[in-house]
Length: 312
Image (tube, rainbow, N blue to C red; front, side, top):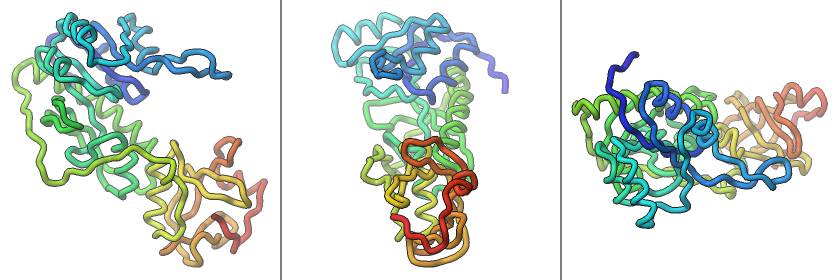
């Protein structure tokens, strides 16, 4: 869909890969991106000694856009620097830092965020993971005008999509980041024309997507097959749901529901179909500790796992 609008003077604020398509879409649309805000480079590289810029910083520098990496936006100096850009709007996509009121109020049209859920469901840090872990059949992106709350701003635009039965968090992440990149230019065009409708979020249906904890990554085979399957795909590819086979930690990257029943955590065949509290799941792609990810068929060619094997 072609969107006709006047170029806007924008500040872009984002950090991970999820943010990059929106930055590129706004640049390709001809907007004047006067500054990019992102998180500071972190130690990385093969020995962890070199500072590695964020994906957004790499793209911004490639486009010749000035990059700022403030430790905080709460100081008067940082807020004055932000306001001095005289932006029409700020676009925020997984920036990872709270914006104080002085920053939210600085752009002429406000600050607009791409949030990876159908608000008000799954406000918070891990909406993609939590949607799949909960067995949601639908997800999407919401463009909202930000306020001081946690993902509580008025909704400007929403795009929905179905979540496939075996779709992982990684699959959904990639689909939603493209939806967001398509939606944001349209929302900005409407905001500039004065035709953007802002709808307050309803109080009913609010849920929070808490950050994923390492304590919840181990697979509990006593749960139903549906719950185990949702757990696996909701944590794939990172941080990854895992179990132990012969004392070795195995991360499960893909699975599918299977027929059969048995003692929870017991293999039902020689293809790594594992019984759950109700039903079974068949593992499709796994990664042993210290090894590369591989399809289960490939793994089983080198490591036989017989029926009635107990996993932990």
